[in-house]
Length: 313
Image 1 (cartoon, rainbow, N blue to C red):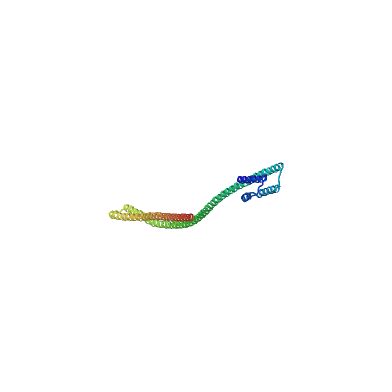
Image 2: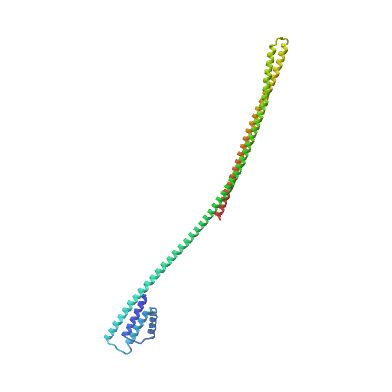
């Protein structure tokens, strides 16, 4: 713009020289004037129109062959300078008004570009964070689904285990009831047999007592007999009867000890049978608990494997 201003000043100076001393234009001068006009054509349209108006005024003011006096020329020169100063002032104002929007537009463009770049970066960051959040949400949904499936599997296993425990408990209760009934039946039968054996043994005992009483009576009668002719034979007979009675007494004692042995054997058998039953129930309970533990461990392993597979997906 300063260069154009200098060129305008040069053109004005040349015009002033033409006014003070008009000379015929040579081809070189015409070419120079045309070049100056080309330079002026790069100015704003309003400025060009003003310069043309000044030129026309100058051309009409001074014609060939006219002679102006000094006062008239001074007035022309003064008006011309005023117009030139006015044009320079307007040119400076136009330059400032042109520079201000240009600078403002450039700053606004830079600021807008920077703001767009910031928004683009924020948009990319937000999109990346949104993808991460969506991935986390999908992962959390998969984990929740796996947990729900695991809980359902555990509940199903608990229900199966509870059912199996209930069935086993019912079987054990039925077995214990059966054993109790068998034991009570055996005890009742044993009591009946023992009562019968006691009654059977009681009869020989009474017979022995009666025989002993009879022998004692006969012995006393033999001793009190007056003839006394056969005391030895009677004593011998009495001894034989006493020995027989002792043998019979021993036999009765032996027979009486047999029910006690039978009772002891039956008691031992009942004890061993109860221990075997308890041991069997305990072993069945332990086996059931082991099976339940194995099933639960397999279920947990399966749930963990499914959860790991879901996380890998």
